[in-house]
Structures are given as C-alpha cells and as structure tokens.
Length: 195
Image 1 (cartoon, rainbow, N blue to C red):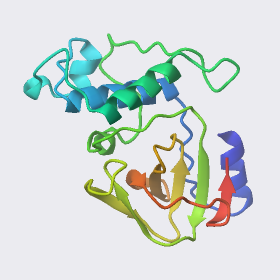
Image 2 (cartoon, helix red, strand yellow):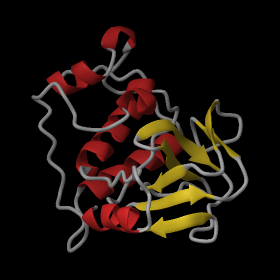
Image 3 (tube, one colour):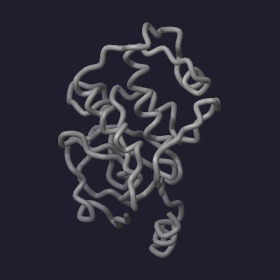
Image 4 (tube, rainbow, N blue to C red):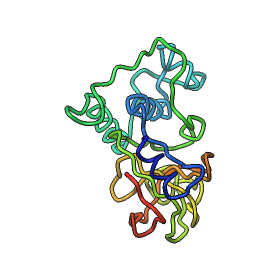
C-alpha cells in the first residue's frame, strides 16, 4: 500500500485512489454472508444481525443457486488462509457489531458478491472504452454504474467466468462498484498501473 501511495505521489497524482484490500478476511466474511442474506438466511450472531436485516429472513438453511454455492465454496477456501501469501486463516469476531470494510452500503446492493485473495492492482486514469458495471456477473443484472475514461479503478477481487469486479474512484470518493465484462487491459488501458 505504501508503495502504491508513493508511486501515485511520484507521478503527480494528488489524491490517489489506492484501496488495497487491507482486511481480506472482513471482505470475504461480508461477501459470503451477504449472499446468504439475499437467500433469506436468519443471522444469530451480533455481527450478522448488525449488518444484515433479519426482518425478511426465512431460514437457517437457505436454498442457494449453483453460482452462489460455487462462490461461497471459493470464499470458504480463501478463508482458510494462504500459506506464504497475503494473509493467514480468517477468524472474524462475530461478537462485534461493526465490520471495518469500506463501501458497505454499495456492496449490499450487489446481487452477487466478489471474492478477494488480498491482492490489489490500481489503474490510475483509465483510458479504455466506457463500460457498464453490473450488480452480478451476468448481463441481465441491474447496472450499478459506468467506468469512464479518467476514472481510477481498483482490481482487488477474483474474476468470475470472464467477468471482473472493480471499484471506481474519483479522487478519494467511491463513485461505483460492480462487475464488468470487457477486460481491462492493464497497463495498456491505464495512464499508470500499479499492483
């Protein structure tokens, strides 16, 4: 992270949009549980109750689509840790009532959550074609925003069957996040790429 900030300052970017996945375990926990929440899961832990609305929950054993089951399996594997990698096995304190994760309100609007391995790339000054962002990695999903030329975008989540996930920044403000179909050809489509 310090390297990316230093690089941004060195090349003259005054307000870098560096959003390293500083807590991949929180990110993974949220992604897994947000998909369970959408499926009607009833949370019993203080953290689950604080982050997700139990008023519409229906079960402790929700029926999941094949895609959600597969993504949850990936997340559970990542939560076991990455020996010699970015992080150790995850252990989220579900007795707390707050999760330190940026853009939770935007993330809650997604239909399908991303999985992170903790690594992040940043495209400063995207130069490619405008492309829509979606709430899930399929084209009939609701749009959540657009990647415009000049945007700074972070690439900190794993692809899903040809779809990428990004957070779009302008300065230090998150403008949108979501899934995109057209691959970002870093560094060719970035003024500067770091990561």
